[in-house]
Amino acid sequence: MSSNLACPHRWGRLLLPMLLLMGAVPSAYAQSGHGHGGRQKTQQPAPSPSPTATSPTTDTPSGPRLEVGALFCQSHDDLVEYQTLVAGETSPKPGDQPPKCHRLEKQVGIQILNRDGPSRTQIVTTEEPKQTGWTNAYLP
Image (tube, rainbow, N blue to C red; front, side):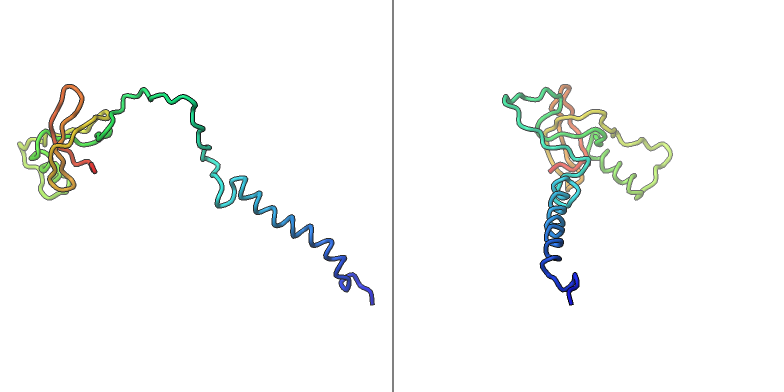
């Protein structure tokens, strides 16, 4: 009885290249960025370091800063009043003045002066004209 199934060497010659090929496909697939360890399609490669280091010429302040949209209030009481109104603990009465708070339109360098818990920080701006006030922004 000589059938093709009875001859292990013949199948071995066919299966061995297929098994080797199957082992190489996942490796190539991972290296191409489609596997779990590769880069995503939208991720750009890391930039290579430039031979000469140049300092960036940006207007962003170094050190602590308030970002665009951060709340800036003139006094501690204004900030507390704003937070109370936002929380809905009280409703405005006729004739009440809104708290003297506004949202920042640009990034501002600051120095931290005082804290009243995690949501109230007294700051002074480092840019001219320097302004002292309170914010609810998270400042570590």
